Amino acid sequence: MIRVLRAFGEFWYDFIVGDDWRVAVAVVVALAITCGVSTTSIPAWWVLPATVVIVLPLSLWREARVRRLRFRSGADGPSTGR
Amino acid sequence: MMSSGALFIAVFLACMVEAVEALTIVLAAGTSRDWRSAISGVIAGVIVLALIVAALGPAVTAIPLGGLRLVVGGLLLIFGLQWLRKAILRAGGLKALHDEEAIFASELAAAQAAPAGRRGIVADWYSFTLSFKGVVLEGLEVAFIALTFGANQRNIPLASVAALAAVVVVAVAGVAVRAPLARVPENTMKFVVGVMLTSFGIFWGAEGAGAVWPGSDAALLAVVPAVAVFALVLVVLLRRATATSATAVPTVGGVTS
Image 1 (tube, rainbow over the protein chains, first blue to last red):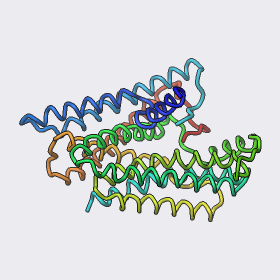
Image 2 (cartoon, chains in turn purple, red; image 1 turned 180 degrees about the horizontal axis):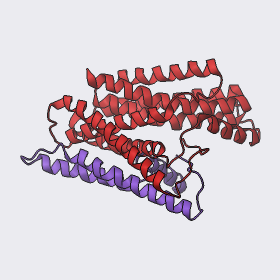
Image 3 (tube, rainbow over the protein chains, first blue to last red; image 1 turned 120 degrees about the horizontal axis):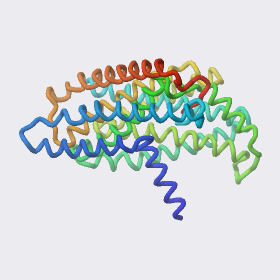
C-alpha cells in the first residue's frame, strides 16, 4: 500500500514539478509576494514576469553545467529521457 | 476574441504533440504484436481520460474564478516552465531532439522481445497495456491543459473541441501513413506550447493573486510575444555557450519524449 501511495505521489511530483523543484518553489514564493504586494498601492503584475526572467535562465544554466560535467566525467552519453 | 483563439491553439497544439507520441506507441504495439489488443488498450485509455475530464471538469469550474486563477495559474506556470525549459534545452543543443522514428524503432524492439500472454478477454496483454499506458500518460497532460485553460476561460467545451480536433487529425494521418508521424514539427510545436502555457500561467497566476494587469486582457498581447522573444534569446545564448564549449554534449541520435 505504501509502495502504491509512493508511486502515486512520485508520478504527480514528476508530472507537475518535473526536473527542477526550484522552479516550482520560486513560482509559489512569487505568487505569495504578488498577493502581498497587491494589498498595497504598488502594482503587483510585474512580480511573476520578473520571476520567470530570473528563474528560467538560472535553471537552464544549472542544467547545462550538470550535463557538461557529466559528459566530461564520461558518466553520460547523448541526452536521453524526458 | 484573442483569449479564445489562444485557448484553441494552445490545447490543439499540445494535444497534437501528445497524440503523435501516443500514436507511435500504439503503432509499435499493433504492428509488432496484436492490433486488436492494441486498439482495446487505446479505447480503455480514452475511456479513463474521458472519466477524469468528466469528473474534474465540473468540479474545477465550480471553484470561484479568483481562487481558480491563483491555483491553476500557478500550476500552469510551473508546468509551462517545465515544457519551455525542455524546449529551450532541445533547441539549444543540450537535449536530444524528439525523434518519432527512433522512438518507434526502440518501442518495436522492446515489443518484439516481450513474451506473449493472454489475460481474460485480452489476447495480448503486452500490446493492451503498452497502448493503454501510452494513451493515458500522454493524454493526461492534454487533459490537464484542456481543463486548466478551459476552466479559466469558462469554456471547457471549446478546449474539448480543440483536443478532439487534434486527436482526429493525428488519427486520420496515422491511418493514412501507417507509420510514425516523423514529419510533424514536434520540437517547434512543443516550444510554442511551452510559451503559451508559461504566458497564460503568468497572466492568470498574477490575476488570481490580486494583481491588476495594465490594459486588462490586452496585456496578453504583450506577455505572449515577450515570453517567446525571451525564450528565443535564451536559445541563442545556450547555442553560443554550447558551440564555444570544447566538450559540448552531442545530441544526435538520442531519444526523448
